[in-house]
Length: 323
Image 1 (tube, rainbow, N blue to C red):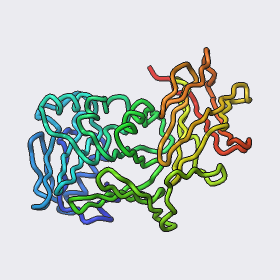
Image 2 (image 1 turned 120 degrees about the horizontal axis):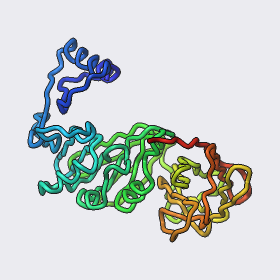
Image 3 (image 1 turned 60 degrees about the vertical axis):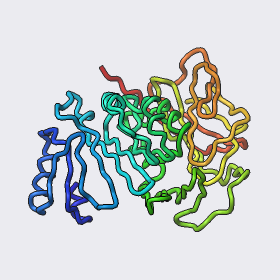
Image 4 (image 1 turned 90 degrees about the vertical axis):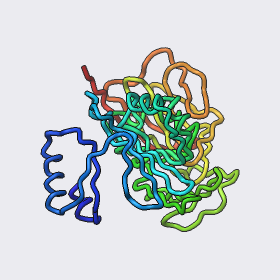
């Protein structure tokens, strides 16, 4: 927060009031006091006076705090003209259920996904109620928690365009109240209007139309973005501007003891496919190796090769055991 205070003119600081004993929290309060920043604790039903043209309603926390501090996150419903945002903070299932039970209109154009798209939230009923055009996942690259979880990621991809800070870097949304534009640090910008999208590179200008175009392996930006040894799955992401045909591409485990060859499959730009080593039915976001037994060991590494046999990505992960 000190970096925020030093680089931005903060005039109003809003928090849940859920007390913390950490030195970090104490330092934040000291900085707020020294900089004479307006400080406010908010609860469900409160509105925040930010600008006459913008409505900001607080949907969480409740007056009685949850035992789970994540469920005490400040949740904001922000509306500017015809464009609406839902910021879920670290809130999960408990908060989602309470918001839905209250009968609030949470249909939003942009969803900041709760708790890094972990399994503790983003249930299907809630995502359908929000029905976002764009979902944004705030998540650290190669984090130890396995975020975002493949099940949640697939659920979001079915209903919205998904952006992730681990793949896209900083994500900035601008709006005039009738349309909005998403700009990303790494992947460029995507404009939204009536549900249609067009891509513009932020550093190299405007690429040619990507309609019906598939990149060759040498042009692709496909790589292994995550690996889970316990649940036996591998995530493959395309962070480029065009679809990439993965037909004939291969995944191999440590020592090349097992090989998965991609069928006729195209990974669209900005999307992720999860390859499970077990049995199942292939879909647009999930593919199955159809193996009978686990193959990823305690110090697992997987290798991704294109259809020419060139190694394009590899990912190592260690199994983390928890009580």
